[in-house]
Length: 385
Image (cartoon, rainbow, N blue to C red; front, side, top):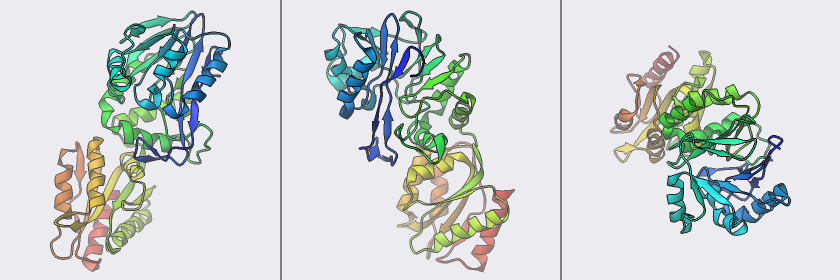
C-alpha cells in the first residue's frame, strides 16, 4: 500500500540479463505500476510484455469487483507500455490518458493511437477521480520527449515516470543501498539530459511531496531531500563525493602499474577516496558512474594504431555522450615509439565544458622509469592541490 487509496501492482524481473540491451542487472529489475482507487479508478503505467498476465492479475486483485476508468501512460518505453493494448481489450470502457507525443508513439509501437478512447493531456492539465485530483507535469527528455509526471496533491504523491528509478528488483537486498544503482541508472540513461532534469526539478520545487513513486526501484517515502538533492547534483554535473577516479587500459601491464602507483601516491597523501577502473574488464557503466561522481579523474591509456586503446576511446565517447563536465582531469599516456594518447584524448575532450586538464601529461615510454615516476608524483601533487 502506498496510501489508503493507492496500491502497488508492479512486478519483479529476475530473468533479465541486460537492461536496454547494455546494462547488466545482477539484482534484476522492477517494473512499477500503481492503481488509485477513488470514486473513479486510475491505473498508472503497465509493465514489460513478458509480465503482462501477472500485471493484469495484480490489477484485478486490487480492483476487486470494480473496473478501471483510466490508464495513465506516463512513458512509452516498452518496459512500461507493452500491455496498453491488452489493457484496452480487458477493459473496453476505460480511457487511456497520455501526452500527444505518447499517442503518436503508440501508433508506431502498437499500430493504433486509440483515437476513439483517449484523453490527451499536457502541462498543468488535471484529472479528477474524487478525493484525488491529478495534475500532469510535462517532463520532456527525462528521458524521452513524451514523458509526463503525475502529481496527486491529496496524498502528496509524485508519480515520477523513470526519474528517481534504479536498477534492481524490489525483492533484491542491495548491499550498497539506493544511491549506487540509482547513480549508475541515472548517468547511463538520463545523464545527457541534465538541463531537462533541472527544468523539471524547478517545477517540483513548490510541491509538498511526501512520496515518490518511480517506474523502477523502490517507492521513496523517507528523507526525500536526500534523493532530490542527489538529482540536483547529478543534473547540474556537480561533484557528489570528494575523491579521484583513475580509469586505465593496459596491454602488457605497464600502464596498469602506473595507475596503481598513482593510486598509492594519492592514498598516501590522504585522498578520501581513490577508485581505480580497468576499462577492459570492469562494468563500463560503473566506471562512467564513478567518473561523474567524483570531481577529479585520471585517464591513462596506451597509443594504439596511432590512436588510443579501443576501450578508452569507447569510454571517452560514453562520457561525451552524457555531457561530462566541471571536472579536473589528469592524463597518462604510454607508447613505445610514437606516443599519441595524450594528444588524442585532449582532442576527444575538447567539446566537454569546464574541464581543467592538468599539464603536462605523464609520458611513459614502454615502462615506468625514474623520470615517469617523477611525473606521476607531480600529477599526484597537482590532483591533491
